[in-house]
Amino acid sequence: MKDEPVEFSQTFALYMKGEYSTAYDLITSICDFYPAWQGRAYEIRVDLAAMMGKLDLAETILEQALDLGYFYNEFVLRRDEDLKELQGRPRFESLVERSFRILADEQLKSKPKLKIIEPNLVGESKIPLLIGLHGNNSHAEGFSDYWGSLANQGWLVALPQSAELSGKGLYVWNDFKRVEKDIPAHYQTLTANYDIDSHKTIIAGFSKGGHASIHLSLKGFFPVKGFLALAPYVGDINNWLPLLNAADHSSLRGYFVLGGKDQSCTPGAMKLKDELIRVGVNCEMEVFPEMEHDIPSNFEEVLQRAIRFIMND
Image (cartoon, rainbow, N blue to C red; front, top):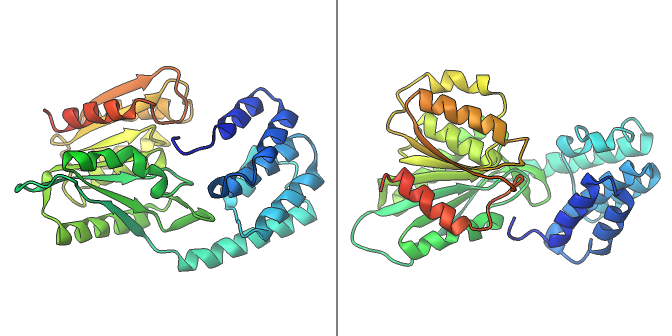
């Protein structure tokens, strides 16, 4: 990702090689240098300490993170295989419950937000709209650089931020009842304030945001020309079949951007693309062979190709 410190990818590469001690030293050395990423750095340090068998250290780091105001969800603290040796330890369990209490309290206060980047060029005609959904465990601001350039081409760019928390300042699109309520509400806000061209409206997203963009396009809560799915996590393809078969989707167009080394998302996305084509959705796909779960470095070019395809230009 554009704003992720390079040391994070270096740490991950060391982790994948099993060089846990070296990875731990690297992430620890920069832990306090990037305030926006500090909570994530502490999380990685907990994982690495656990993988090194230093369970007391892992618990101490988690306690330090909580003392600093960070908190983590069930996926991080319960479902991460790296922490399996910590499960059931009294100190760890106490810290987990503390984290979950903070999360629950903060969730009660969390509200959906909408970041808007207005077009720099405004003509007399209606305004094309791109709605861009951030990935899980992220936020709207973290993705604004990817979409913001469209404002220079006369597009209105709307960046919803989920209200569903996963950690301090981090949000996810896991509750689809919330997704189906909040995103259409944002669209109503946009149409009340701007003269939107419904024939030039695209919904896009990364990872679980990509999943949500496809889901909303098929549901038809508001008119879209098509979707742009970047490394979408789609899960079990069978769960999509009722939605795919429920209506006529032949007017919809979709564009997939996938990483050849993204084994968690690319295989499922390819299956979904085939099913979408089966029900009449005109789809295009770009696969970057060396890319993992990420966005291409030449994204500006990719974005323009996607828009031309979706708009059928």
